[in-house]
Length: 477
Figure 1 (spheres, rainbow, N blue to C red):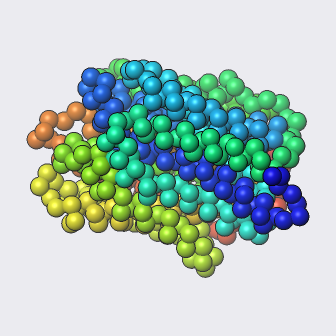
Figure 2 (cartoon, rainbow, N blue to C red):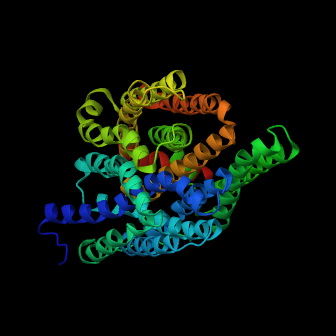
Figure 3 (cartoon, one colour):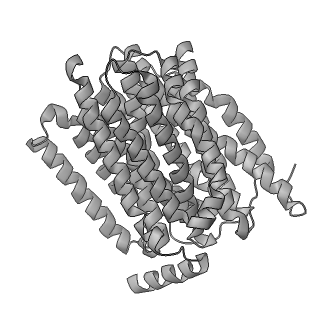
């Protein structure tokens, strides 16, 4: 079957089904791997939380570093081949993860898996927008973002069920989904030619970004052992900052940088991207923190942990799918501001109520409901606002930048939580987790502050954004 222009509605639905399957698989992977982390540690001889965190952070770092490279390559060579390559790579690497005999091999396979995800994620949104009328694109982006919410709702319980059968199953489950999406994608995805013949992306810049994020994460994770004011910790954090500054300076001069700084001159895009990054710091810390609390402090099984976490994520899809009228009435900025504040309120509820003997229904559950509501009001709305702020020629690159920011946020969220939590004695666990909850809430409130430009000024049209980008590029030249 070929997608033709005679039936654009049918074509759009077929493309959405393919994209949805791939995005669902990659998003589900995040939630079920978090749920499986304690079981993976036990399987590999009681590996410490610092080592295990690289199963999450190694993936996120490579994902972040390659996202913009993938977006630029897709803009040059076409979205379909890049998407299908990423889908195949992600699926094959999932098999490697399932067969890993130790933590090091598992981390290596996760790096390959991340490379595949980096290819398919920005191109998935671009393919969807390629077949969507301009007036329907904001709704299409919200639907695309809500796929992550559906994966979030199913992920905790699915992860618990799969871990009961053995942790390798959290990766094996990707195989049938990946094969089905690839088979359908070959038939139905549109094949427009690449729109640009610009220079190849800045690979050295990608290496600088990778080194900066990895050094920062390593410094935060090792800080409890080295000491927060030790030479090793302060030196590592300083090196991360210097690498980051070098990366920014290089991006300002390179003809095809990893981050196109002129895009950040578009106020709506810059505000949404910054808020998404900060909010993901909070989200990643919340997700790993609840898994570790339930299994480490309350002694829940992986399956019971999944059921305990599920109510919050299950709120995300219905909220995300019904938030459109509220966004149209009040604006994306106000809705996202309310969502980030609600999320922080849920975390602060945990700081005030969670204890070794507290009841689930009066401590963890209310916070899960508030955080789920906050995620549904924040992630899809800010994703839609960032995409709607850019001209069509920058859809893939803009999506890659916001997704890169979210992955950097995920790395920082996990690293900060691991760094603050450390390995507390049983009697100190509640206090250690309380400090973690305060840090997570602070990140969400910073995300709220980043939405202020979206609240103060109406979102510019994509044509106006194109003029802003062109003027910034001319000024840089």
